[in-house]
Amino acid sequence: MSEQVIGERPTVSILISGPSRTGKTSAANILAERYAIPNIKIGEMFRERTGIDTSSFVERDPAIDREMDTLQSELIRSASTESPFILEGRLAAFLASQERAKRDLPVVTVLFWAPREVRMERQLRKVRRDLPERNVTLAELAAGEREREARDMAIWKSIHPGLDAENLFDPDLTDGNGRPVYDLVVDTRMGMPDACADHVHEWLLAKNLIVVPSPSSMGRA
View 1 (cartoon, rainbow, N blue to C red):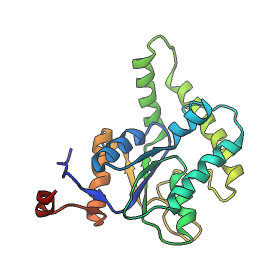
View 2 (view 1 turned 60 degrees about the horizontal axis):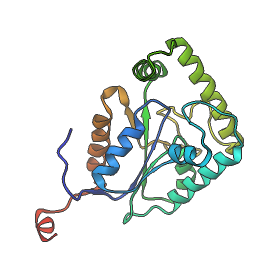
View 3 (view 1 turned 90 degrees about the vertical axis):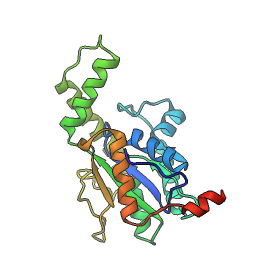
């Protein structure tokens, strides 16, 4: 893990999207703690709002999804260089692509990605660790994940007709103007969530999107 500089801070809000079991929640936690900025977790807010566990599909009123998406869009529109935040949500980058079609915003979109078979192997290890009494196969988990994704996508598509439900998490996805939906793609097979968070940080540094206090300013503090 790269050495942390106390007081380093991004000049953009970081929107983290991706399919389930990619480690995006853990990485978002690491980045938010590193930068000491707010960490907004849409999945957690959804669960608190509805009592629905987003790790599996549950029949629901699409109005709930619409409410969460409206909140994300409002956050994205209000993003500023002075008050950056982490926003973790499966549709965050797609919603940002719609807002950025209207005007430039101080946000970056990050896709946490891994092939479905890799994600399901991770899920199987988790089930065997946490619920050793549960007799489930990798094929059963994969089938359940495909069904859940398809039903979630159907709800999202009903709310956002322009959403590419077949390729939402395609690393090469572009918007209607040909602009990449994802500014950075993190293939999470590279390592644990801390390694993925470091990768995001190094990319931000390379793009000059991190303010690193000078030794003199740190001394005055």
